[in-house]
Image (cartoon, rainbow, N blue to C red):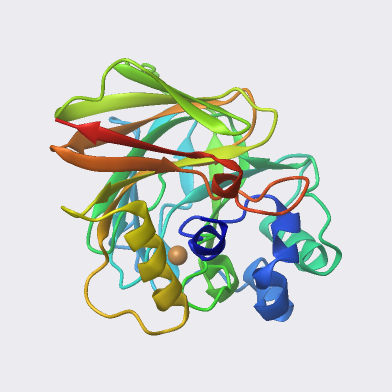
Length: 309
Ligand SMILES: [Cu+2]
């Protein structure tokens, strides 16, 4: 298990000391620094990313290796609709930058952390976001967004263990004071609690559409990535496929569909994602690197398989 898990970093690396593993050896820290520097925003096609203040919905397109996302949204509950244009897996990790910090500060801190393996500074607040859907698929998460400065980043590091934000997937986002009527907090029909190291589900995940609340009961940051295994396939098959993908030897389609979820959120935070479940075998996975040993949380047992009838 640990062998396969170590390479399945679908949505890896929230704690910077995660870089003490493979990422540190291969990450080009110059690129990381440049990623956060002014004047080098992710390449944008302004026609795809958008924000609708009436519905409080932000549409974000992800591709290799750029986001097309709005530059500014208004505060409050916001639905982030992620379209993965592929060809790789991508997600949106929302990071709030407190204490007046900027995207350039973020880039510099990530560069320093890649060298020192220090934990992220307290002004860097991991605030969830839509986790990775498969290429050519979509995912949606609803997050309460206080006013402030943020960056949207992709921490997926397939295929070469270099996180995508170091390749251009970083997009500054400004959240301004709310105007007009606020969006209501979503109503969930199931809740998944995250803990060190477990997923606990309340409510039944039956076939059909669900709004799922994800609560981090800590003490570490955690994420939830939802995958549906192809018929007859197991988590072991998924891991073996990912090992090949990192080696550049993937043959055939993956034995799973990535369905999104919630990117890394700090303890105490809760947000929502939607999922349309069909009968089959599923799993919740957390790839966040452990604060103590840098291993992905799923290596500490933070993986939960379940069946939908
Ligand atoms: Cu990506």
